Length: 502
Image (cartoon, rainbow, N blue to C red; front, side, top):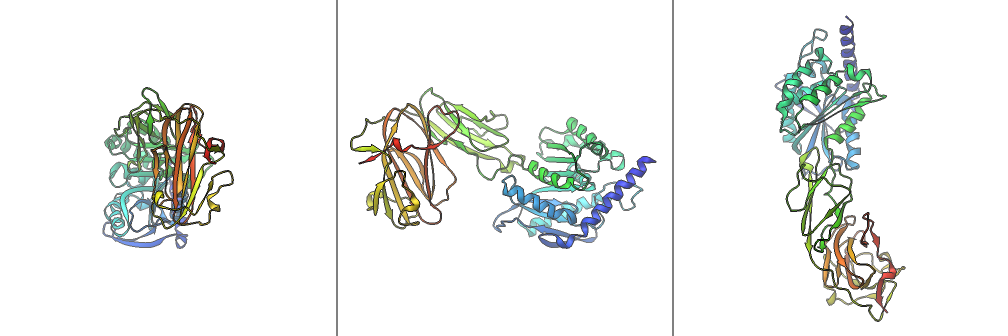
């Protein structure tokens, strides 16, 4: 009798929560749309929220949100914050509004609720009607996630086990696995092994303490540990100090973050990116961005999860074709970057040059319309001088449509590998002697440092930096990492090591 009373109370709580969310439907973000369902024999309303920086030429992942009346805005707020922090990509959000949630979100009937048991048809509606409708009328790329809370979380688990092709990722917030005497446990035991090689993700959340067991999550966690295939990325997360309603936000936030685990909106960055190496003399390479799972090879083959895992610093021996790959929970967002390290010789230094003094390289300033680096030999400078401590490109006569040539002699005080870094807005190049180290020509913004490693010896080296600025922001930065650095600590070349003509 106590169990029956508890069941009725939980169902009543779910019904109250669903109706409370529906009362705020008029405040939902995005566009209200509808579809007449032949499967359900009724008109169903949805709320569609496009990405905040929507580009009609692009295709987007889609997040389907059950109980859309109360969860669509929550989904939008969490997703946009995560997108701004580069944890997830832009996403289309589809909130599915309720008519009878107890009917739609339960796959089996119980006597305590007369309308329960319509989940099979509702799942058919989602996969056979709603998803095709969204794919046809909105720029979807076919990569779908589904979020459900309470009975919606139970429905999400049903969807994973019965129709795993419909969605790529599944988020079940405080799911009602207790429903119908935990019938879902037996289904999970039978069907989880069949998900092998499908590469799905599943995130389950709940309230820490007695409610975590009471909702049936402890039992499902044990079943997943025993029966889940190796390629099902899953996590069950209890949250302390939350209610059945408040747990939705953390579940949405962490669930999306887990769904796209390892995502970043840029390629893997490692330094040096390329270089010259001495035979049998290893050199360090650093990944400078925080990735959750990075693997690499040095023979030019595509890394796999079985390849060596990247540490903070990896020592390589040339020749090497370095391939570095970040792995995510959504393989379409995996990213690979490559670099080539050739065997060579230490670049020969010069003796101390006459008629040069330390304190800054020479610069020549040119004016003109440039879309790429010009042939400086064909130009006449408007202004020349020393790029000393007072030099600043913001103090040059023009803010746009100019070019700059910086050249002189660089003093090297110790033998070893030097890593040069170059960043600019717009194009730039750097040479040591006649050796082009970095070519960063073209129209682009700053913020993406290019680097190159080269072995140098004590002495002096001719150095030349070319730069042009067309419009917008302007910046030029040349930095280097000294031999023997234990960290990729790049610094500007000290003025006392920069020699210019007197």
